[in-house]
Amino acid sequence: RAHASAEPGVLFWDTATRMTPSDAYADDGFGSVSTNPCGEIILSPYDSCRLMLVNLTSFVKDPWTENAEFDYGHFRSIARKAQRLMDDMIDLEVEQIDKILAKIDKDPETDEVKYYERSLWYQIKQVALKGRRTGLGVTGLGDAIAMLGETYGDEKSIKTTEQIYKWLSLASYEESIQLAKERGAFDVFDHEKEIGHEFLTRVIDELTPEVQDDYRAYGRRNIANTTTAPAGSVSCLTQTTSGIEPAFMLHYTRRKKVQNDEEVMFVDDLGDEWTEFTVYHHGFKQWIDASEDPNIEQISTENLVQMSPYAGATANEIDWRAKVKLQSVAQKWICHAISNTTNLPSDIDVDTVKDIYMMGWELGCKGVTVYRDGSRSGVLISDEDKKDQKPKLEDGRHAPKRPETLECEIHNTSVKGERWVILVGLLDGKPYEVIGGQADMIEIPKKYTSGKLTKRCFKTQPNKYDLAFGEEGDEVIVKDVVSVFDNPNYAGYTRTISLALRHGVQVQYLVEQMQKDKEMDMFSFSKSIARCLKKYIADGSKATVSVCTNCGAENTIIYQEGCQTCTSCGFGVCG
Image (cartoon, rainbow, N blue to C red; front, side, top):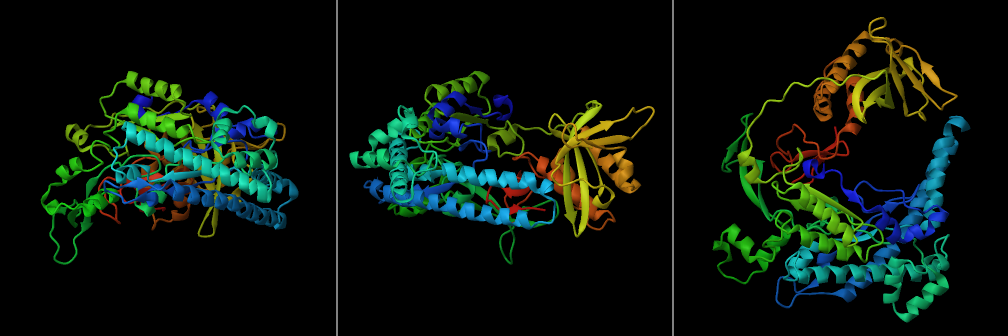
């Protein structure tokens, strides 16, 4: 399946729980149970994903020259400050949770209704204070390696990567121990539980004798410290490569609408006129600008690429063995895990994907993700693959048979002051049918977010659905829930949407159509359904919008967390 669709990524759970420091405190409630969505933070129940990044390109002295070097002393100093700032952030987080708890106490609902929400936030607060987990990481590694004149993925760059991550870890732990000396260790710290822990022993043994003495005397402030996040949004701000990743592309073409007397280079289907221009990866442009070659402007872009330290080192060019090895040396010094993707050509075989997973496990990675070029729609593919593609007609789809009872999710939403209840029936975790109407017609407490929809006998009682929600033994059943909403127009509208869902129409296409109905009488109802269905759009799904209104790039609009996002410039729109 990973070969076919880039999913699933693999977590090596035994390695993760053995090597993650917080798992030494599993008996205190800090045993790992899952990760955040990108997989870089391994979490225990009720814990929080806190991330902070240090831009590695800031520490390269004399970049793009033969004298380039990485300033480990300055890096260590800033990493220590960042770890201290992360610990401060936990106290700010707790302050905000206290405000939420105070609001819950003042809310007019009964204590029974408020119990679950209050309990949830209280648990989150207690875990934050007991463990004080942080997620300090880096971004811009790909550019930093190029600035040093090294090639991402070769042996020299792998050694540099290990040194950078080692000093990140040592600085983070030095500061965490100093903070414990000043402010106290995390609540459940127990030196005896950490003796013999493979990862902690590796780090502590590299600290100075004085810091080791402080560790034994005062403990650590944070239960686990470091990670490497994808850093996509942050790297748009820093204009660097993302996280541990290499440069994705060194140059590409963008379009923007023609202004005044600009040259028209492209006319779209709507008659809009566009001009095209080349965009360079920021680090690559820096290398060009730093060149002392007087003829640099006469050299073609492709030749410049081959002359640069990025040559052969973009995401789609790096040998997968080098990518996995580089990740493994970084993982050696990281508390949590690393978000990283091994890019593969479209013609790679299934056995190679298996070999990548095996190598990652053997080298001590906590997880591995692969992406085979062209294996997912909605993701950028190479120009070479586009040339070979031929248009094809979509085969008709037969709707899967509805079981008698479906799990459903209950959504309470409001549009322009009108409150709506939307029920989304799920088959294999995907939207299969929608029922809904005005909230005034049915009273479902907001604490109930899931239930079951049972369809009565089709022959004797067509279009009759019963909704059940609540705890077992205290279950509430709403008979013939469609008639309760008492609006044939709404019922007809939801039947049409359900029909489309059952026959495989992708959720994002339905949502986009519903958001266009601004003049219809049922606009509020339509928008409420669209708002709920957005939550079921898979990240990476392709939008129907063909051109980014911000940068003019074509076919780069995908969905991220329900919002349309341009993969070229990062511009986002939430309808």
